[in-house]
Length: 129
Image 1 (spheres, helix red, strand yellow):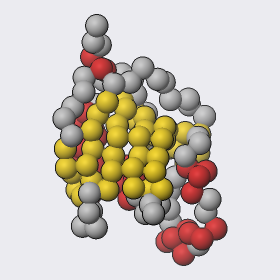
Image 2 (tube, rainbow, N blue to C red; image 1 turned 60 degrees about the horizontal axis):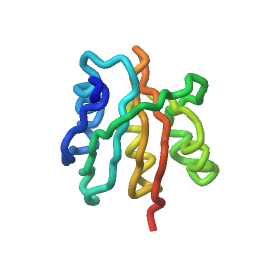
Image 3 (tube, rainbow, N blue to C red; image 1 turned 90 degrees about the vertical axis):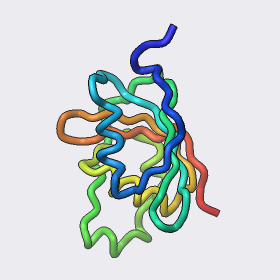
Image 4 (tube, rainbow, N blue to C red; image 1 turned 180 degrees about the vertical axis):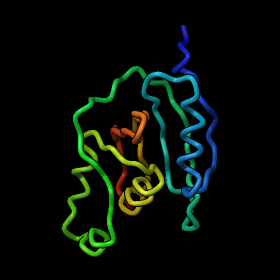
């Protein structure tokens, strides 16, 4: 039996700058987290994204992701794995995934929208070689 949240989309190519709009379109009439797989397509900012079945909830407790210009200057001090083992809140899916795809070539994650921010939980990943 398929639930409304179990609808699986075909793999699509999307430019990262359009990611917030693409993801928002998937949340029309949705009340729970969706599951996606994403991989870097090329160096021009395109990604391949696919919606997958999900039965997992995202835990509410987490950290905020907002990179200021000062934080961009000190990226060496960031432990990237901190973003893979807990719930992340961000106002911009584009900024978060643009940052994450500098370190990972593939991400599988849960995503929902809380009304003012995206809530993300990374499930699996492959580091850039």
